[in-house]
Structures are given as structure tokens and as C-alpha cells.
Length: 332
Image (cartoon, helix red, strand yellow):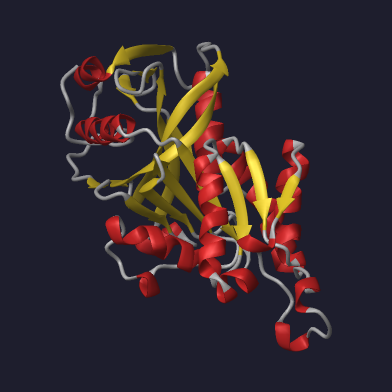
């Protein structure tokens, strides 16, 4: 099937926009703010095997008679990473580990702008069975997949994914700022005991479905109660212990940044997909210590909202990718 200029849900000749450049990607608090009348969706480049020579999965949708990448619309109550993992499971039958955010694609559909965020997603387990949305799935080498894909924009996403795979990280840190807490000015007593407020407790609960698709391997936490309460729902869901260390918090970073950086580096050196729940002074400082070789945006212009997550990719101790998830709260 030849490549089409138009996208999946319309027969009109329309122009898509592809936003997949750079190694620093952001998902804003409300992605719909970027475009008027937005339909949000999420998907992934599903892969298996050797990252230097992987196979990727394409699906055939009989409704459109096309070959495309797995994706789907956001359901009420979901964050975008949650949507990506759910849609992959529904359309392909595979459980995956989300990786790097590739970027987003925007195109008009029936008077609205559809915005699709794409992640890398490595297969963990599962079996494909034809379903209501897809009747065939093929595993293919990337060059072959680019020939089969029905839409040029999908081949651009796949090309970007190939570059991501060639520099697959040895560690991916999910660096979380603690959720919203009671105001310091209204709290009497030890500030380390200041807890999350109602909004913060909801944010902490919503971190569970947003971070679970990354399949964390360990959970670390700064000492303050608000940090521990942010980490607790995820730890309960995954059946993991929380390793509490003052070196992950502002008190130590303010007094001796080198100690805080050393504690963070030990986690990076340990590999896997660790979660670190920290604070608003420490997170920018730690990222800044790695950023000069990577992030060109001045650190003071980056965002570090309560309950936000920086997904940091490291190759042999060097920062090679940074995705910012501004909020775990639903985008719809």
C-alpha cells in the first residue's frame, strides 16, 4: 500500500505536524492547551529482540484497511502513559515496559486537532489475538516496516525510534517531586512531618497508573513525610519497600550538594528503572549537574511542578534523555 499524505480518520488531503526532534521532551499539565479543540491519544513503537537490530510491531485495522503503529484515544481519568500501555494491551495483547518518549504528532480530524504522543515500548509478555480493532499484527525489521506502513508520519516516528534504540539506556530514573502538601505557613512543628493535603494524596494515587507502565525496579525517597506519602501508593501497588535516605532531600543538598549527587549517582550506577521521590531544590540541582552536556534550556526555565516526573535516561552514567511529565492527574 503506498504512503498516504492524509491521516487515519479522514479522506481529506491534510497536513500533519511531527514534533519528534531533540532528546528533551515535555508533556504539559494539559496537552490540550497547545491546540484548540483537541483530541488526545497515545501509542508506542512496540519492539522486541536486540535493540541494535530489533523487530517492531505493526497492526492492520480493517476499518481503515491500513497498517499503523498501535495507539488510541485517552479515556476519562487517564494520563497519557497510562493510555499508551492500555491501548497496546487492548490492540496487541502485549504487556510492555514504556521507555523514552519519542514525541507527538498532530493532524486535523473532522474539525479538531488530534494529538498523538508516542513512546518506546519493549515487549515483556503476551500473545496477539485478533480483536474488534485489529485483525493482524506483524513483527518486522524496521526497514521492512517502513515499507508497509500506510502513513508517512508513522515512518518518521519509526525512524526516530530507531535512533532511540541505538542508544538504549542502562538506567532510566523516574525522578518525582513530592505531591502537593499543606502550606508551610499554616503548619506548626517539625517541617519534615508536614503531610500531603487532599490534592497531594490524589496526585500520589494517580502516580501509580502513570508510573507502573515503566515497571520500576526500586523505590527511593527523601526523608520528609510528604515525600514518603508520595511514594507509598506506588510501593504498595508494586509490593516494594521504600529506601528512605536524607541524601535525596533538600536539607542534605543545601548543606552538601556533593553528598546528594553521590547518592543519586549510586542509584544510576545500580541500573534498572528506579524511582526517586525528592524535593524542589534538589531535583533542579541534580539535573543541572548532568545537563551541561545535554539540555540546552537554562535550568531556571525548566519546570518542576509538584508531583511532576522527570524520566531521565542514562548510558553508562551519562544523561542521554530527559522527558518531563508535568502531572499524573488525568488529561481528560
